[in-house]
Amino acid sequence: MVVEGLDSSGDGNGDLRGIMNRLDYFEYLGIKILYLSPIFKSPMVDNGYDISDFTDIDPLFGDMNDFDELLKAIHIRDMKLVLDFVPNHTSDEHPWFLESRCSRQSPKRDWYVWSDPSPGGGVPNNWVSVFGGSAWSYDATTGQYYLHQFCPEQPDLNLRNTEVRQALKEVLMFWLNKGVDGFRVDAVPHLVEDSRFLDEPTKPEYDPLRPNYDHMEHIYTKNLEDNHKIVQEWRSLLDQYKLPYRILIGEIMADLPDVMKYYGGRYSEFDFPFNFGFLGLNESSTAQDVYKVISDYLGALPKGKWPNWVLGNHDVSRIGTKVGHEYSRSLNVLLLTLPGTAVTYYGEEIGMTDAEVPLKTSKDFRDPQRSPMQWCSKENAGFTTGMKPWLPVAENFKTVNVEEQMADATSALQLYRELLRLRSLSQCLGFKIVHVDTSILAYTRSAKYCKFLIIVNFGQESWTGSLNNMSGSGIVEVDSEMKIRGAHILFDNIKLNKAQALVLKIQ
Image 1 (cartoon, rainbow, N blue to C red):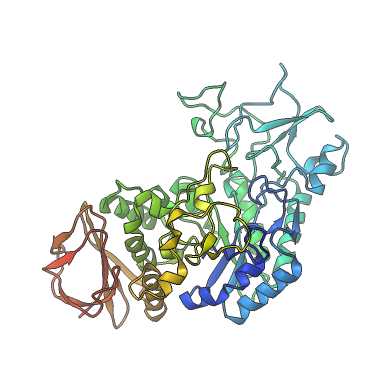
Image 2 (cartoon, rainbow, N blue to C red; image 1 turned 90 degrees about the vertical axis):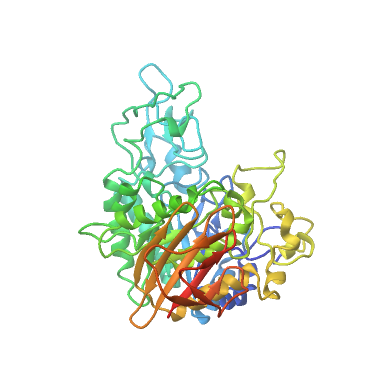
């Protein structure tokens, strides 16, 4: 689970002690792994992804003693902790970059990607930042441009340089030696670029006056073959830490064939790259759309590799906002009954939706989905005792919050907990789609001595009918509405309300 705790200091920002104060909640749910977005020293231009010290905690979140206590408390509860690893770039305030930019003769000059202006003056080529505009910024002191595939304050490291790769390995070892259980690696496709600095091909809609990242073919800056050798080095390093096993997860926003390469062929790379297929769901998505995401992903998965499923993250609108709040429950049934690892973005377990962030106070277009966790119906949703949280709380916090839902046996939170309980008790390896149409998706999960049928209504109205080639009956183990557990259902006469999902144990 991607976690957020609360603000323990009253400054409006979530912090490490705030997470520690909520560990009982994650244990209550049955969560096994907690993942934290960057907690390292940073000027916070990009919400902590612009790191100025990879081996220290930003005071906004606490200090190293807080971290050590949190890690110990997590391990006492038999949970694991995964940290963000951001190897593509640093902050422009990182000592490495300050030294690199001070002179062309600096020993660390080659630690970053520098280039002379183009022959006619101006940027070296047409490369575009993910956030828009040129990927190059001019440094007047040395008369060269530096590359930044994200913000200008996030200069790209030169991962072709062996000293840089060694320095990053030492960052990993620092945290591994503390006992961290693994890493989620940020922005993996961007690790290395073509060293010839050739212009990238453009699409018909490309406008050189307003360069847009999506209007270019990124054949020289994204998913280059040398990326894999670097990931293999990290996997090899983590494999030296055998007890306990250390996990490596990759963030790869790319087409499926490119994503699957990061599992490795002859060589080990990621335990899994995040599967972002469901991020494209919206209110008009049908059961057939969901089926296509599942079948395409499982069809592309290399033999013997482990699947995973993600409904949302900090970069996209919350799933409850995109598909409608009422479908949050059924999507959690889907997430937690598909084969493989399920990844939950904080708040999805209670059906959180995007907050309204006034344009004049917004610092990032992604602020609405990053709003504070909704713990209770009190002021600021119980996230902070200060005057105001770092971002506005979603307006529905009075009813959509942990405290209210813990007390309600029919709540989305109790559904999520029940699904995790069932996952922990049922080691089902078999998976088969048995029915799909515009509204209904149904599949079975099977083990040696039991078999489950999962039916999800993605339609816009209630549904009554039978499933293709399915006869017999089952007992409701989980109902997304938390009302009919234990009911006996005949497969030739199934009734589902709009957005309802059932998990049936086949008799």
